[in-house]
Amino acid sequence: MKAYCVQCAKEQELTDVSDVTMKEDNKASKGVCAVCGDTVFVLSDEEMIYSQK
Image (cartoon, rainbow, N blue to C red):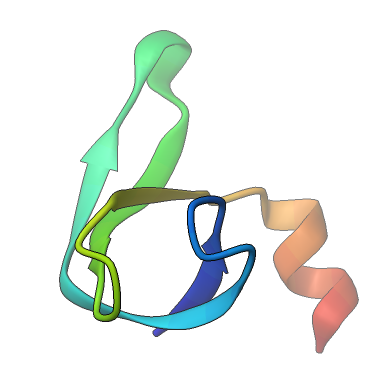
């Protein structure tokens, strides 16, 4: 999975990706940037997912 890493300031591949539930039952994916090792969260917004297809 790829996501934007703030520390690297570009899109990077994520490792150790897992699904998590945040406050208010918001779903997200949590992973580790393969380049810098920083923790990265990707929010799972259904509208955003459907608009990208």
